[in-house]
Image 1 (tube, rainbow, N blue to C red):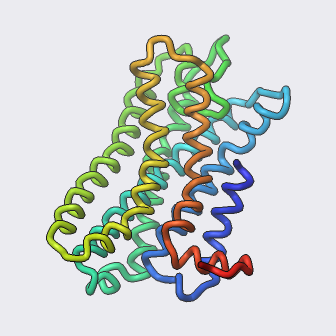
Image 2 (cartoon, rainbow, N blue to C red; image 1 turned 30 degrees about the vertical axis):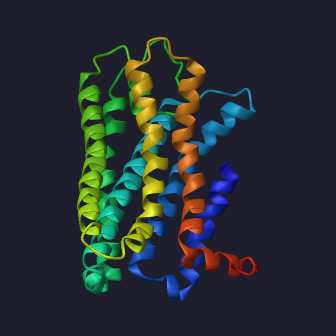
Length: 275
């Protein structure tokens, strides 16, 4: 799954970078998504493979803290890109004639850079709050990679700062989903007032699939942690692994299948005749 995810995302980046017809604002967002998917994969790859394929399961505190910073950072970046893409789809449906003038290439890159910096600044305090904690005899993590809430529970000193700031980070990420839902309310309202509803809906299919792929594992894992009284540890671990493995694997497939411009160029690069 890791190899397929890396191959798929690298293919998306390569095709969009090499094809001049795809160097437009609307294709920069799948590029950002592929880039952050690669970051998410590389962040968890070392410990996931070592846990699954060897008997060396340990990780130092510093390495664990660095890993959780990158995992949370890239996850928030991906959530931000999905939010930007929802606004992009709304503009494309609401003002198709002004789309290219509103979202220029420079403006899209600036928006992406701003949200990436926002994500870094948001999760930057997490390593420092974990570093200040004192860890005693409990050293067993619940997942095959390091998460802030998981490492925080191993501390035997006061971790209230970690709890409240971690909750703040989660609420910020969940606010992205709220704004995405609001944008789709406006999109549906706009679609009801135009004649070509089918064409407008098709422009949103790949984005809706990416939303489901990203948010369903997160929501499922959160519900299991919160409400499942007799949850299986294996089920929890599998859900947590799906959070990091499924989006990087499925997003390139979705955009190759549902975006015909990308699909045609990928097939051309593979020397296959597109249908």
